[in-house]
Image (cartoon, rainbow, N blue to C red):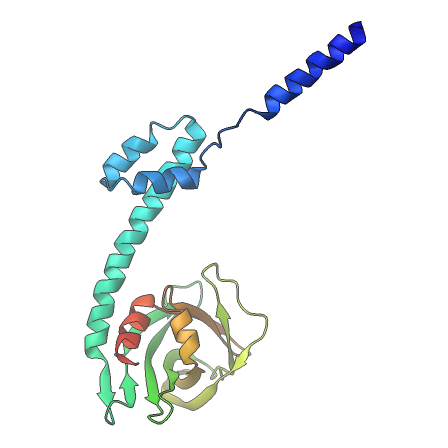
Length: 237
């Protein structure tokens, strides 16, 4: 009898526990989204984050709110720059050819302050008016000082963490010119064309794209900015 009563009591306890509903604890990401949805200023968002129940969650949500603020600032800059680039896109041949503005920048290629290459690039597109498909080309010009030309021959595409594809893609080197040669050093200019599909550019519009330009002597990292793609694709369609 005593065993029966104990067993019965244990069964009642289990039954009672199974009827309880455990309230899910909001994750840090959920708390961040909840605070952002309030439509407050960034400073007010941080005050809301400071009210959370654990120091760890306060720290994580505060960092996520700062990242969200930085991303919004960058998105506003990209939008402004993309509108400027869109206005500068050249349209030729009755709307079948598009040329983006040309961008010039310095690319670090070594540890010394003087280890700098001069890079210029633009995107050109050609539309087939019968199929309405657009093919794009990235036109690169890389100028550097060296004893020998580098002879770039391939590229690898990379993600935002700088992890690059295992397989390389061949490129077209249009010309290699040498000038201003002194003391076994010349100023070389390599002009390169890279074929890009319309789908690849559209998939990259939210982040731009990075790549490594490869030769037997040197690898150069190049990033094509999001704002240029946004502005170019606003017109090249």
